[in-house]
Length: 179
Image (cartoon, rainbow, N blue to C red; front, side, top):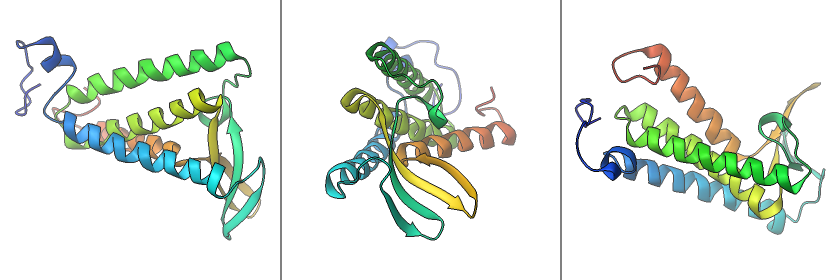
């Protein structure tokens, strides 16, 4: 699509599939999210030198707890084998390429930002899987007996991006994510 929302029918393959009017914005948001995510994880592992299940209270409702997640969201599809690890890493790469192509072809600012957040989070967790064999999770939110899953900044970016896409789909319009 062009900046006016008209589908691009001609032009080079790279213009239609690899680089678009919002690609620079996507690249920057993805990079910032990725750097913040990786910096926080490196600090937990090497700065704070946390060990598995160490609990560091931050607020009455928030702790830092190091957990190695060998699966995907909420610990689903736990993979203890190298094959599973590499399959999840490959899946992450395929999803990242798909998100990039979607962002290249998007013109709606909210969709572009949302896709960039999801992409940054996916790449952040993908790097963990390649480097450590599991994703570094360390933020634990709880209130009284209610305990949420342990997560990381990449997960926050992914959830924020999905929320943006959902909002866009319900908002409607010619360039919504629902189309």
